[in-house]
Image (cartoon, rainbow, N blue to C red):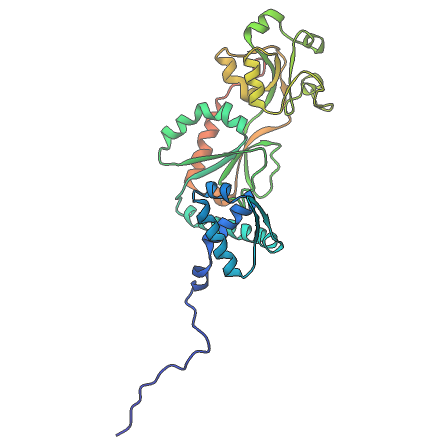
Length: 324
């Protein structure tokens, strides 16, 4: 009778890796802590930002350094510095984590899951959008809207942000762009101040007022219509924040040149008054922008339709004909 033998698979020269095994062994949590500590240069501040204890953050860094076999951070009391190895690793880890987050967001976006993230100027959010947001929530109660503000232009292709309301000329490549609002500059002040000092028509009339100066809306634009001589004033009340200058103007501190989108509600409610019949068209306008992939998402399209309707009914300043 023929002899039967059980056959065994030949021994492998190395441990067979299961798909994804290497990724599961990566210390992703420690890498996230490393980026936070490196950016804050403080274990305490990084721990606060991550919502963990300082000791937990320290243990994560120690585990990562043991995993890599190199020191990434140099500690001296409360002072934290990157070593040469840590400085070299930081941008690669930061980019890798960002790419991973974008990939995960993309997977969720395919089924429309997760929050809707939109970026814009803080002044536009505070003065124009905020009073209107309740209607968006009423119309779309299931959309979790998260708004980022800042003056830096967010890279929609890399950041995971779905859409933007941008203030500019509209020339952004690789994005779907739709114009929302033209912008105008108008002189405004407290109504009682306008009643006492009278309207302004030309540069000579401005001498009756204390002028409020802003870096983003300099008086030279209104005086010369082109902004060619923009300059930061050497005297007078000056702000580099559009909302702050409006609060000071409401308090009666002077006459400000303001973007109409930021003051229209205050003028309608009587807190501010337009001091001149002359409004100057600003070179920049407001645009809705998003990537082609984001445009296919129902939540992005819902926000686009909503803000389009809101801007369509927004009136121009006094003396300016509404667009046909």
